[in-house]
Image (cartoon, rainbow, N blue to C red; front, side, top):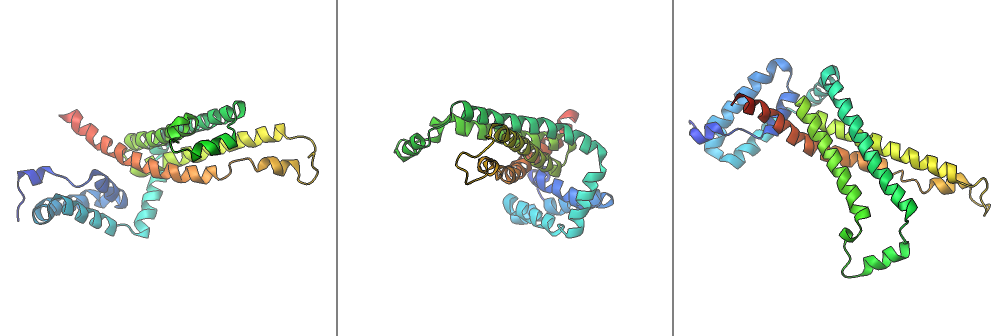
Length: 246
């Protein structure tokens, strides 16, 4: 059954095509993606409709996700020196920006600490809103923007979704480690020589204030938003040459 003109102009999800090409060995990429695209246009679209055809295409892509294909894709990324050269620049800038946001928040907390009792009473009010405390949500929004923007930029420059996710993951991890290291250093320099109570070592008492869980939490956040940014960056990478030729 042959599809109409509208069907022939429609393509599968860009991100799914990108994932498929990443999973395939270079010698098979054009052949397999071309055959699957033809079946999508000629068979899936006329018989299933756009939405179910997209679901069908994604299921075909998932069928190519094997241990060998995932390992091959990872090894392929490590061998592409140009990608790593572009990746470390994006990662470095985003890492420093993440650390700067966290340290700025830390300085505000040191200079003007929040009264925990006042905070608790404020949360108990019916008209409480996080937007009344920009110190909490502005840094979170800034970090989300930095990590998603880094993933988008890395994916757009390399044409690979995985590089976007990897750049954001690395940036969130390095940035949070830098921040925690500074907090540890500040605590160590500000700790008294002797614990006045004499029951808990001063170093342990001060180290308890260090946000050690921040590193894995930000790493997971970076992986998630970096993947989203990578999907957008990959789409822009594909659209850009099409516009340049029009």
